[in-house]
Amino acid sequence: MTTYSDADLYALADKLGQRFRANHDRLVTAESCTGGWIAKTVTDIAGSSDWFDCGMAAYSYEAKQALLGVRAQTLETQGAVSRDTAIEMVSGALVNSGASVAVAVTGIAGPGGGTDDKPVGTVWIAWKRRGGYPKAELFHFDGDREAVRRQTVAAALRGLESA
Image 1: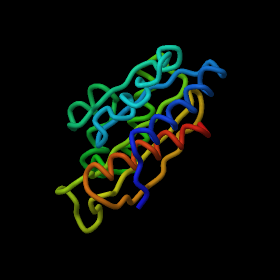
Image 2: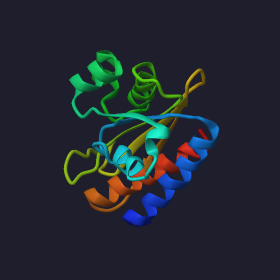
Image 3: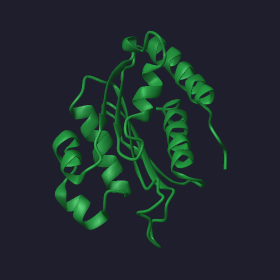
Image 4: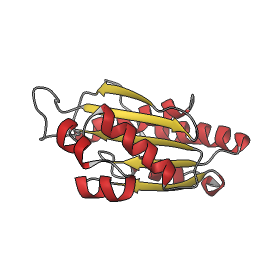
């Protein structure tokens, strides 16, 4: 398990911000298990208003549907922690923002909520560039709630390097 400090997350966001600013990209985040931590990390960077559009923390099924356009059928058949939900979240974030690039995260940070099929630490992250196809990746993080969330923020930011 890799532990990410606040300084590590700041460094990832700062590097990302430099690239986004240079490329005139704008970011939107759609967050469930991180509750806005990616947006918080990004906005810790001075000048992030040049490249950060907005963030949506959508925990409930209703919020995922209303804010991000996740289909009720997807949530009912696949669950909130699924590839399909992550892809619908990232796509909905772009539809409902002025951003050019989006990241979405949905997972089980724990300590409860895990199942045999989806244990604590199961996280789906999706990335998408406006006009492009979404990419989604499944992660299995170790540790307590904070460790899972920190690893999710780091993986989301690292994935944006190639978005």
